[in-house]
Length: 483
Image 1 (cartoon, rainbow, N blue to C red):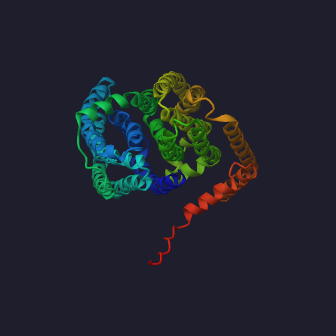
Image 2: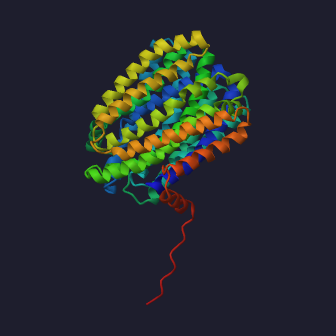
């Protein structure tokens, strides 16, 4: 699991750097209002892609992890279903946006974005199988290639004066490049050739149904947040929230990485309670370390991040949105990992119901809190993150009920307490430094938190040895002497 996570982390570091460069260029070039429209379109497309996926991500990993022979039929069928699904969902999106009274230009942007996203949606089907076979290096390679190409085609388009429509359309070129690379890597693994099958299609649709309900509930939350915010607050507020949301996506990425690396192993261990408990704790402990540090860093350095990436003059109100989000980051990390454990043991229906309830609660809170925060602070985006934290508390409480009995144990609770203590001490210590330059405060914050984690045995010597082994390049075995 550690090596899988390591490959994903390397990929994520590259993609995060590229994403920040791209987001900064778009934010500064478009301004808050158009950037808000772009965020709205991106969110709508993200939800649509989740519908098209139809639970394939979790289902295919679970099926191919123990049996690589299923890969060909799963891949070919998934590719066909993704093309058909994209056409169907695009028609529904067009109708829904018309009913919500969005203007013709915004509806056109959404349809072009759906078409431009299709090649990468197809490439993602290959990536799912790479993860199932624990080739996270290949999966990360496809994602990085797509992000590199997105930057390579978007920045020149922006420099040449391109606006929203052209900036959205050129991303299809990047997806085509990622699809070609994914197909080449699949051949390199010598896995079965892709072939479509009606029987496998039925299995994907039926087997993915409980899983897609969970995925849709997760994806629906940012979708409904964006819709409600665009209707209850001015366009600039949507842009401020979109900028903050881009940082949130970066901050949450480690949880997704650890979850992706842990899920195949949790799936394999689901029949052995002791092994399952050990694997879950092995995934939870580093997650708690990163979540606690992320929470503290988000609160302390939101101002610095927004100033560097977007400029505080245009996007300054994104800072309080991020600071209010900080506690929710920790909640989200825990929720995501518990959700992976629950899905691995096949309890997806209960989790999906709980998520739907939490999303409904969050939407209700949005309707109340967005106008209230807009009137009180001039920033309705703060209301979105407040409602998010409330719904995450509901999810964690439900997940603790659904997770297999004994899977967490006292050791997991002790790890959580140590992570919170390390974060609290770091936050207080950094706050006492007052007006110290953030460029000095940032490394001090990381160093202090790391020292506290070691002192509290949240990070052990074995963890450091494992990390050292991952960083040290492998040496080939010496050649054996001929007999």
